[in-house]
Image (cartoon, one colour):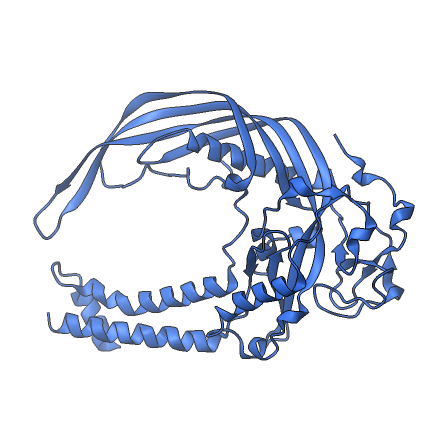
Amino acid sequence: MLTTGVSDIDEQASHIVTIKCQGCGAEVVINTESQLQARCHWCRQTLSQQTQIPNGAVPDAVLPFHLTHAQAVEQVRKFANKRRLFALKKFKQEFTPENVVGVYMPYLLVDGNAHADIAGFGEIKTRQYQRGSDNNKTTYYDADVYQVTRSFDFTVDDLTIESSSARANQNTKQNTNNVINTILPFDTKNAVRYDANYMGDFTSERRDLNVEEVMPVAHSQMLSIARQKATDSTRYDRGLRWESEALELKGTRWVAVLLPVWLYSYYEKKSDGSAFLHYIAVNGRTGETMGSIPVSVPKLLLVALTIGTVLEGIAIAIVANF
Amino acid sequence: MLELTTLIVAASDSDWPGWLLAAGPVGAASFYWAVWMAYRNTNKSHSYERETEVVVSNMTGGDVKVGENNGTRNRWIQGRNDDKPRQRL
């Protein structure tokens, strides 16, 4: 079942415009009533009205910000201060937590009703003993092998899935989107019906993925949940080897929602000319913070090698005197 | 470096604590990895398997003993994957 989030733009949202950032290509949604000059929340480039593009669908719901700008600044500062020693010098010099911006990120919430069949093998230890001489003992185990099957119905409530294709790409070699994913979950039960006035000074991101496109992700996540539930229902002290899994989705209900995230971004320009975007993200409701701090590789390498050399020196001394 | 190599070759003798020589490389690599992960957090993501609200009903299934695995040196069942719910089978 689909909700109203796929309907056309209504009048209420007429002062909401979507602009393509000329800096990084992100599609940023702003409220022209309260923001005349807006910056891209990803790369802080000033946005130009000239590059306006059509708005996407109006979301069903929005979860308003609870954490204030000052609280978010404090969270970002705390997170970065714990990671100063090996941080890139330029990052430390340019560190301005006040630049943290509030962004409504688009997600699809899915409620699902499913049936799962999971099967495999589990082992229970019956004996543990040692063999060999005093100095060269080996531990052996005896175990009973069980065939394990689990079949059950389950409902999933508000599984939260990225609905912006740029943000859904979680390749940590290319980006740091995973840190934004990590600050989930939100108290989505408190979301209210979407109203353009909630946008205020915040920017937003356009949803460009439809239900069909995120369905494989939802399916896989529900299967993972089923696997976890199946494991939780067992007690095998030598673990399980699941060999088959099947999920029958009986029904899903989707809601397009905007969730509040405070975002601090830093563009790392690498020596080879390429750029890498680091984020520190703060959950706009719970304050949960996660981020990526650029590391000074030469400094870290030097310290790691020094530690290695000291350890090796001690080891050689022990071995030589043996 | 040559000394180190002879030491490592000699390390194949039992009783002799040659494995200690791995302390340097292993220590350096572990330190590098630990700091990298603390700063970059590339291994982090939302643990939806545990943090999503789920209601399970009509749980059925079986646990049938089908054999024994005696005298194994492995601490865990071979191919253990109950700790990797995201890995598709």
